[in-house]
Image (cartoon, rainbow, N blue to C red; front, side, top):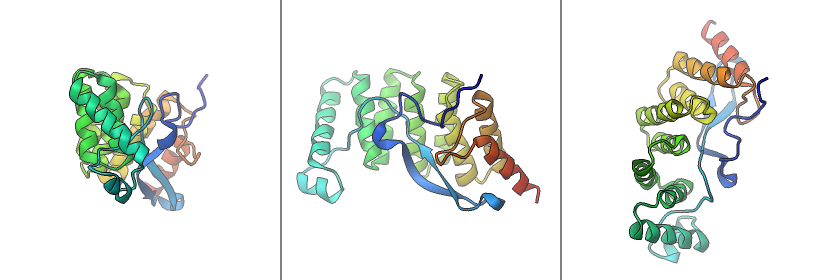
Length: 207
């Protein structure tokens, strides 16, 4: 029996960043106005990016606590560059403070040390998307799916990028149909069944 879940909602999703990336409005016939967003996946506690001073932290919307955490992880990765988890946490910090390029570098460093982490590949994909690199995002999501064919978040995000960034509705449908095979009861962030989304998208293409 299929397990009823919402895409991206499981033990690995960070509480503070359930939904991330730019909000997407899909105008597909009578689905118009529904918004979807790429999900962030990740392990551990989120933090933030390095800043040269407390003033800069405030200017960038980074709290003192977050700035301290960033500095702590930057120091740890500098002193212990083989610490995979520290690189992931640093990437999460950059992710949460929209430091896309820095997040990409941190996630890629962690993947050099542990190449088979689908969650990090998914986070990397979201950062590529937010850096206006949709092809890189697709490749990262596909890598996550290759490692874990049941990885719902990467399948959903792949469809988002295909649909919104690459204007590939057929590709998006295929990606989401793959998600439905993994979990027929998968739903979008706002609770709409992915199966229903696919049916409406197909209908809009046939009008």
